[in-house]
Image (cartoon, rainbow, N blue to C red; front, side, top):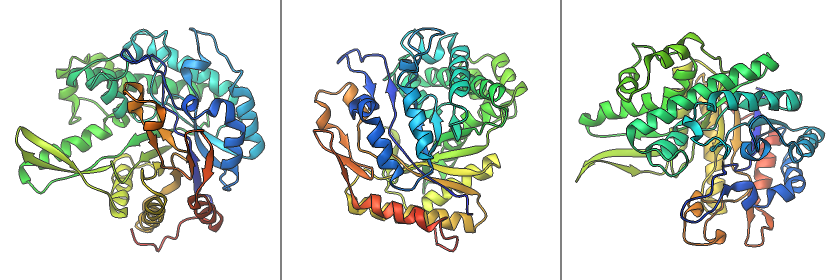
Amino acid sequence: MADFEWAVGIEDTFVGQPSGSRGRILDEYDLIDHYRRWRSDLDLIASLGVRSMRYGVPWYRVNPTPGAFDWSWTDPVFEHLAGLGIRPIVDLVHYGTPVWLRRSFVDPDYPARVAEYAAAMVERYGTVAGGWTPLNEPVVNADFSGLRGVWPPHLRGPRGYDRVLVAIAEGISRTIAAIRAVQADARIVAVEPCDILTTEEPALDALVRDRWESLFLPLDLVLGRVDARHPQYVRLIASGIDEARLAALVGEPQPVDVVGVNFYPNMSRAELVTGRGGVRRWNRYAGGDDLATALTRFHRHTGLPVMITETSDNAGVERRERWMDDSIAAVGGAIASGVPVVGYTWFPVLSHVDWRWRRGPYERDAYWCHMGLWDLDDRLNRTRTSLADRYAAIIAAGAPRVDAAA
């Protein structure tokens, strides 16, 4: 696999609406001063030898008013990426919408507006980009924006979750169509989170299956698979989703080229147990075998090539090094078993700020997550760790060994 895609990414969550309690805007680029340091940050990334990276664009900033675009920041950035020989997989939406979309994802104008933005991006940067992600982690968006009400549009409960999820799927569908109308051969990388759930209680087996089906649901909606025979169809109808909306998605399936899998060992595996008050979730630290399982499940469900689009560990350098080795070995094992894994992304490459900062009581420096190849301090200095040298050596060696054990 000489064309195996080694990549990194910068945490790029953008929730442009100020939080009600603190008035804070969750913009990770602003929090780490990337808007000012973008050139030196990209030079650091290029020093690893990568030719690909996941790179987000702040929709709420480049599209400040309906139909108007401000390319003053993105133009020099994409020009520099091209000069470095890095072809970014562009995150068009990495959480959040422009402030002027009053109801965010459930605004009636959302699908058309996100498609308009996508088309404008492809028209301007299509020759630089190596791929396009319409929206990062639909189920996480639906969780924060529709189930728990943390982010706009601040819906709550299962019905809110389904409303946001279906609206997001409609937006993704329109986005892919808009991208391909401008660039027919554009590569679409759908990015999904992973949640390896297990149970030792037979009574919970059906719940585990349901969770997997729910995880696959956004992809199934975009791929036009959610008709009356789909296991989640009845649930969506019960949540008040109009049958005509689901039928429209079935009638206009949008092809995807690669399924990106986001996997974190400290978050992506859990066991379901019955306890006081009902079913409880116990997080378990994942191993390489769990990552291989995730890659296999997504490939078998979709029939598409898969790529690790996010992985790292929120821990000290030594544990991060172990996870890097274990996860890359798992990729080799998955490839050896016949799973077409086409790439691996260490994400994020720089420290970032925990999302809890947006509504939290403390200042930024209380919320650092050190998961990258460079660690940031309170002055935002980028300190290179031994992980950077390790990853650069791995990249230079070529594709993962396919005889590695997962």
